Length: 66
Image (cartoon, rainbow, N blue to C red; front, side, top):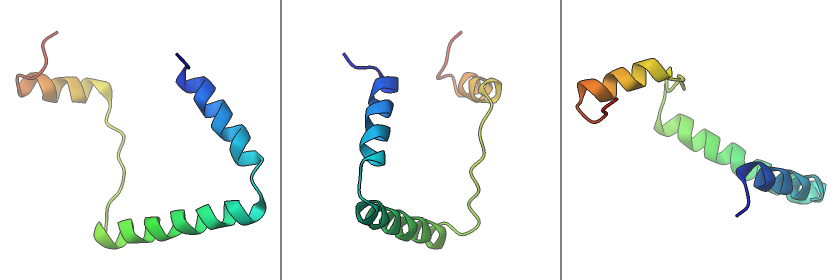
């Protein structure tokens, strides 16, 4: 089994070895997808949930037992 850390390092190395043309191609796709998301979800702001609040919500919904 390969760890997520090793996969990330491998992908980073592969990305660094790509041509500028290939990187530009993927960056344009990412920009387009970002704009699609902004248009589909105006006003969306990512908010990191803290673990205590997540556990509290799960307990309240009877989905989580400590």
